[in-house]
Amino acid sequence: MDVLYFAWLRERIGVNREKIETQAATVADLIEQLAAMDEGHALAFSDRVSLRVALDQEMAGFDAPLAGVREVAFFPPMTGG
Amino acid sequence: MDVLYFAWLRERIGVNREKIETQAATVADLIEQLAAMDEGHALAFSDRVSLRVALDQEMAGFDAPLAGVREVAFFPPMTGG
Amino acid sequence: MRLSVQSAAFDLGAESNAFAVRAAGAGAIVTFTGLVRDNGGALRGMEIEHYPGMTERAIAAMMEQARTRFTLTDALVIHRFGTLRLAEPIMMVATAAPHRANAFAAAEFLMDYLKSRAPFWKKEIGLQGNAWVSARDEDETALGRWTPGPRS
Amino acid sequence: MRLSVQSAAFDLGAESNAFAVRAAGAGAIVTFTGLVRDNGGALRGMEIEHYPGMTERAIAAMMEQARTRFTLTDALVIHRFGTLRLAEPIMMVATAAPHRANAFAAAEFLMDYLKSRAPFWKKEIGLQGNAWVSARDEDETALGRWTPGPRS
Image (spheres, each protein chain N blue to C red):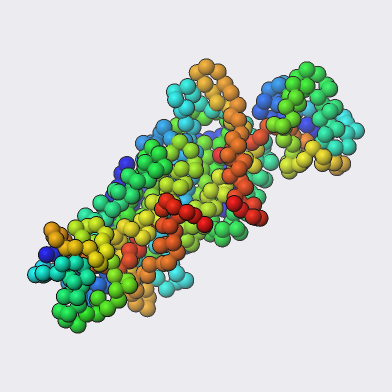
């Protein structure tokens, strides 16, 4: 599964994209797995209030299932405009 | 006193400006005097709901006094923008 | 602030760019442009009459009100009079403010006032004849939202 | 409708004029332009990161929503990413509609959605260092006015 990071999540983790092998059933499960990987990941996922997720480029909740999903993106609240 | 007319008031009266000698104390008095002048004036002042007035280029009510006023303008509701 | 009441056509793009340069300290610019709109193919153009002197005074007062009420860094009003052809710009308003909410509100405020409180009168030049444009009740109603007091 | 997510600068005036030509049947055009604003002299510029693909999808969906909800005759969104200098335009929105109320409402709707629902992230490049811009609570609140249901 492709996992993408943007803004300060990308900076804390150090890469903007990585391939992750996972059996996680939901976004929340995947977050637990990623946060346990190393210090950078732990720091990136420490503030869950400011964490947003998109599954195959559509916004989703943490309870969303990952079955069939190819691309997961994590990022802080958007600041466009 | 200079009396100015705009839009369909101007068209009905046939001039855009005229000098009027008047002892009218208020706008309402002046309207009575003007409406009695001829058919064109009578027609122009027949629809008082759609009549607006400015005294020296400031909007005023029909009960406004004319003392000291040099320029009176009559016109329908504005349609700018 | 810049105000122009003119018969000549104006260039929306050139005016927008010049305004943006002057407004360099602002974060948000809103423009409104009104065009002569063909009402289903029956219109050839428009005649706009105005009250020279009072028009400039009235608009300048509106702009000063908008500037203080919405803490604008700059504002622009251009309004034409005379003969206008189909699809030509009639007028434009531009507002500049630190944030978007005030820039939008000020532009709407100026438009609502220009519609009903600036001494212009529009006459439609149609294929079937000419007709003065009637003031719309909703334009008068729109003004109500800017007056202080209880709101529904 | 035209949508462009680009790193290159754009010309507000040229885009406004091109939009006005396309919108010739409309009576009202509203534009919004966001500029890199100097926050009291401490800013050198801005870095804007985006999510290629999702950005275009999200904005196209917003534009389609705005078009049907406000019966727009046309709409335009240009949004830049990458490195921007002080006072440069960040983005612009343009809307065209028969009457002004819908053109204004649609431009505000698009801005509210772009602020909080288009995947861009701004970083301020300051003289004292860099900082990600925080989402503002009022931007999230502003979205609430467009959702159906009881309003205060």
